[in-house]
Length: 482
Image 1 (cartoon, rainbow, N blue to C red):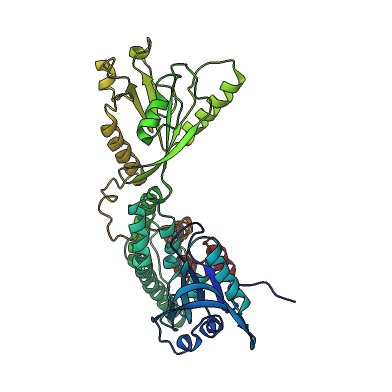
Image 2: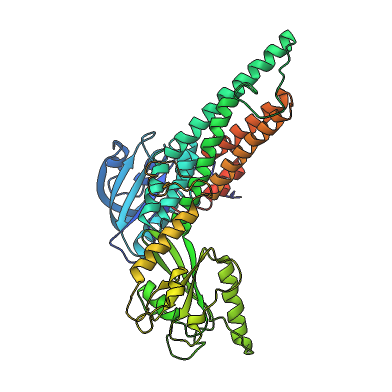
């Protein structure tokens, strides 16, 4: 009975590593023990591959017809270039090869089918990177950054992912762990001496000082660095996930025209009939390097129409979820000059006086910060996009640290995933519990486990501390061929 494939079985694996579709070339990747020998069974120049050095490239054909010692007339499957890799100097740390064949659907599928007939099994999601991690070629932050690069929506997100791949985050995590290791060692040393000499350590119940417990100075510095990492994550999250920006306002205020202007394409239907947009429409744009999910919502007004009511409720829900609401005012409407801000949280709203080319904004509203725009002729659009980007970037920074972190973070160790953020927050939380215990004059044997918990959480980030279940959960989210 054939057993199910698993990440740790070490079998020779193969996968199509390029996206399906019409293309000039495709890559079929393979790795594992005996993978080069298995590949030689279905290559037109078998001895060349068997004798090949790592990094060498060879021309030939993938063929089908020589299997298990039975020789048939070989069928040419596809013309290829093979790059051979020898352990440990390969991506996975194993023997392997990249088979470059013709693109499209049929050619790579036929090459893959031939490899499977000759002893390979189909790779699981992320299995190549899993093997690179297991074989010490990459740490877990680097492994996760591989898929982050693939999923990058902006160049800024790509650069941040590349920094993690090059080890910037790993180095910072290791530096913080070194601080905590020193703190833990000082605590353990003090505990050992206390047991031998019967010497107790009295802790101040009041304000903590650097001498409150052995290693506290290092622990405080470690916590400060962890808090910076958490702040950097909010910036990174903006780069990778983007922000939700919702166009809202009364019917016929010009939301759809502004939506089309910002999107630079005609997506929303624009008419003079109020209520044309009865449901929300969205598009993806990048504003000054910030990825944005832009939503054109239904006009908010009193109505008895059940269909319009559903659309309005969806609009209100989107406004509650939005990182930024662009509330559009129809400058030509009769009540525009007496406009009052809607009730609720207006901190995440820009109020836009639309159709400013036809009717100038009243001085009183301009002094309140209402912005002038005209969707018809793009007036004010450049200033608006700059303000949107600046607002979203500022919002990404945590409250009290209003620094220019977003603009000067080149080389800084931004965490890239929610898993990393959660573990950093868990580590920081353990340190804060240690400080609370010390301020309550609890003994060192109560404080010490909190320091160890903080270290273990950081170990999970890099993969130093990880279970098979956790690893499979992480790598199964990758695409096949990575």
